[in-house]
Image (tube, rainbow, N blue to C red; front, side, top):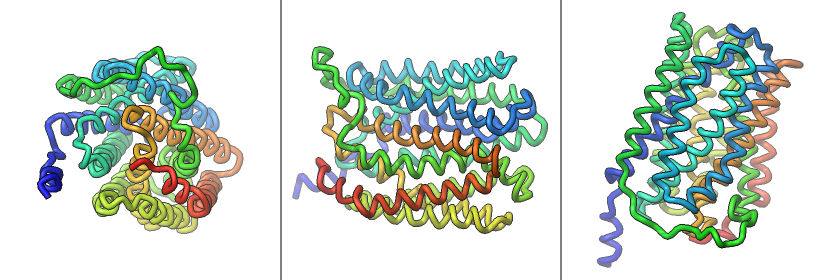
Length: 398
């Protein structure tokens, strides 16, 4: 009984956890500040067509994907705070590169290089968040940590599109992202984490040092839904303007999406605490499919914004449970690897979605690209019910 009481009193919102959550918010705020305006910026400043925009923007995600497995290995093999500060500094300084990108080739190189820093920083930051959480509050803490992403999604795109639509120089947007990521770097420098046993370098190098190999089925499930999200998040502004007739409305779309994400995370937290992860994921998948169907079939401003709320609820229920699934499939010494595998899976699907979505939109239409996203989600949902849910329940360690 005394053990149960002590567990219930373990602090969730400790000083280090608050710092790493705010730093995560600032990291993703900087990221989302650029996300919706970059297609317009590339089109207006460099006269890029839809397919070229897709290729350039997917480069960020592809390089983030490439670094993720190595990021997990590095945070498990070296002092995590040192790794975090180096990766976060690289993420911060690359925002200055956009200010000097005078050609589309240089912009593409800087954007792709920035993806490397983003991929490493997000692995290091989220692993640090797991480290500073009390073990009994970890599943709950992962969910709240994700809320900081969602708050950034609510504020960043809205501010970005407001600034861009009102004729503010894009350089000001780049400078704003530089400043906010710098504040996140300062916050992370204040974290005090405990020393831990590192994975020794003399251990043989193998695939499972970089990828959580027993989580392949779960990885594919994440990819199905991040593929759809890549299309959604990257092209929603242009789709709304060109095919639904909404001018300057993408900021509101992201705000409503984020409200749904945050609300679903808060409501599903009790299911996560009870270990009902596969139920959370299944419900989230079903809601997400309904949201995409509404987005594709209800092509009016009302449908556009209503689907944002539904999609937010679906992803908000699904994503924190998926991340907890990967953590539960790994021993404590491989948290970084588990984290990076989840994020690698997300980025792989996201990058393919951005690239394929841009190509489909160029040759057919954005509407067709979103119809494809809906079909991919349906396939993922069927595969989850048929195989992946039972696979997790058989192989989880906690």
